Length: 358
Image (cartoon, one colour):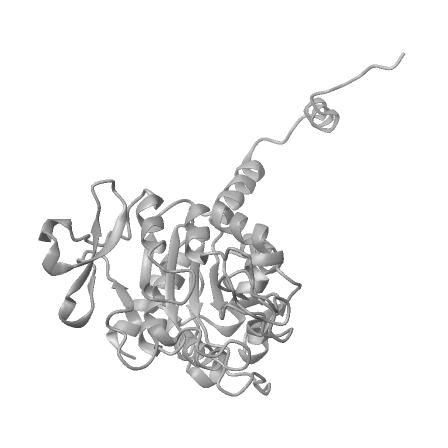
């Protein structure tokens, strides 16, 4: 085991209070006996491979790993990982996972969902899990289409998208998933790409080590119903389209770092040529900023139509008490308190509003 892998295990166990496996694990230990049934070329294969390869580095037992999914192509995930899991109901995975995480502190709980499952029928469940800062790692596979139900436009499809359910083009204004998560004041928000194994794994490591709700958007190609949706940031030269985010470093991209994210006099962020601006206007990425407005501004650099440029990496990572920790502390306090008297118990049952009927 490498030094980095051991460090990852120690960080995960310390932050998430999950017991370590007795014996070292490998990818095969997390590979189930189920036939993987996605369309050929689907980006889900790459995410699954990265996930199964990464889980052993956490060092936790399979029985302490739980994956909860909703409905959609991505939600087949629990079948293919040899751990505990639940293929739940449409949009409700965050709610079910909240119950699991609150009841069992010793579990590492993952939510696997898609842009339709999480942002349409499951929108409320998602934002409240993030708002509460439940100790979950939420992976949102965004292919900007409904794949399982055969190609209707989704909450992230661009305006004008021609599909079976929008034959003249969608008139909906799409969600920006990162902006939505930051609006809910999620404590960890990141984006990565299915085809970039190294970056995907790095983001998964950071998300899993975070205590609280981690939200990771994964751009994932659907070769059948929305092929090429992310061509601008995949393959060939992506120097001018991918904006890499590294905490503490200036945000520069493009060939030889010729472009940068700069701050206007109004405080808004924009993209400019480095040669045209003063060096001190170039933004130094601060993922630990307590004010989500900065990360929100970063998220707005992503175009909602045909992708021209997009930030990739961890936009926000801050500390805040986790909901499930607070619930358990509250229960422990109540259990350790003095036993109530009969009068106190009756008063609790009666409540504050009591009527006497004569």
